[in-house]
Length: 230
Image 1 (tube, rainbow, N blue to C red):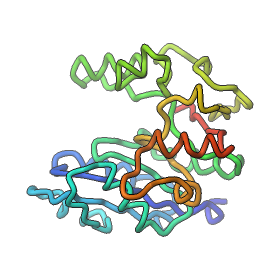
Image 2 (image 1 turned 60 degrees about the vertical axis):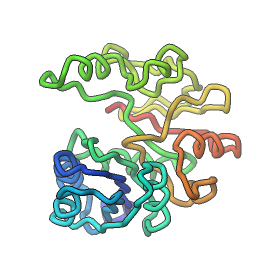
Image 3 (image 1 turned 90 degrees about the vertical axis):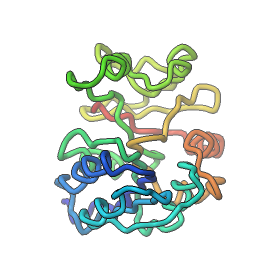
């Protein structure tokens, strides 16, 4: 039952995101997840446009960064987050379906040993620029990660997890994957739902670098991740 679902703090670092952040926040407030269980923390980096005003219309709590550094913004957001789970988003991210949070949270509840959950596909939008569509189809946002076999997303044509890591469970909604420090892909950046208590155990101050924190966790034995079939 959804009343048993964990509370979630959404951390969104932003700078001059007036033209982007509205769609991001719309995708959060449009979730079928209990709204009272979600807090939205927008960490503004001294924007000079209407970013803050847009964020406030969606009930976001505004935090101040001022360091012109996105990793610093994530760290500030984590420090102020009050809830059990942390969702890291950038202001140009969109949750692709209304049940995205519900599906991820349900998987987290079923797998208490899992560090976090993220989608294994990028959504393909036929109206995107050609470069964006290419990256969506190939599951990349960094060519180096692709050629070094460190990507954390599948191609649009791939249906089974064949990337580094050991598949422990293949469920309808997700793969449960076990990684080690030598085969950890670039997990934990945008659209990553994780446990606040685990992030607090990492060297997240003054900068929260997603791959560094996750590597720390894997080395400490927290090495299982939910790769959602979304």
